[in-house]
Length: 373
Image (cartoon, rainbow, N blue to C red; front, side, top):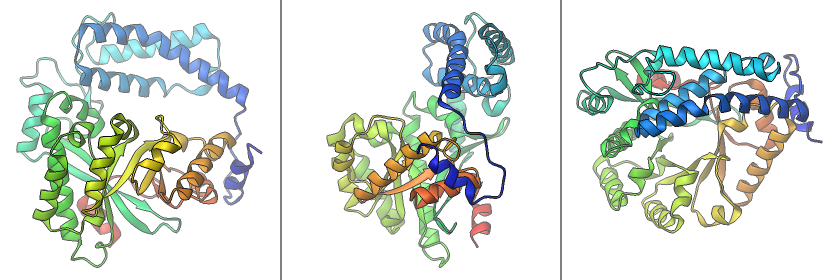
């Protein structure tokens, strides 16, 4: 029974079936991964104690995690000492690449866009980021969201930094730095103003006026006492149809102060603004929480997509989420859809909206508008 969804998903696709991973094998792989992370934990904790810069710490640990995940599974199944040796060599290489002392005595300077930033730079990243706002180096990229027939329903606006030296930088590489100060508020305001201005332009275009535009809101921004009034003013200034705007909030943010969250969402609902819970499946939401929150959409986190076509357990979890949200009158969208097998499986499970590289990568405005036209 647990493998039935996986079997159904691959029947409709002529490509070769992928080998289904048994529970025993998955447990062994999980144990191997834990061995790897345990190896580097002391280094990360040591640097965390020496350097209180959480933004840089986050970027470094994210890169380290990505590096570790590149180790082939075949290697992970070898003996434990072999795994430790391989991981040790990889992490030492990363430390050297970033000019870090292996024992955590050097300053943590992140490598943005996989390129080296020298510690003797004349300006800190925070100062550069503030300058990026003034010099209009920040921009929005757009990733399509489609239905089961691949018709475009809307787009998600994703922040990028066109750095003059390091090229295009994704938001997860610099937002943690901005969150250490009020700079995040300036960036979030710029994103909202830019997104609403874009919606205004699309309103006069028959091909784009029905698009929904999703925008991520940071915890700092949403928790500001005057956030509702600020967004109301932006909506009035741009004159957009507010029902075309959807704000994405993380699960942890919504549940941090649920009473205040509900109050703000309802106030913005009256203006027409829609809301989506982002990264669903990574937190601790319960049915009682979902019943209280006036949501329009849940976005299933991409980590549940990775094995959905080959792992019956993941498929059952996603099926449960989809059925639950439908009964509550909430739409559901799956993010991180990258293969035809995943798409086929999700359709059979009853998912109605999708986002991921299978349907289009994040792209600049001119490319998106050309594509949709």
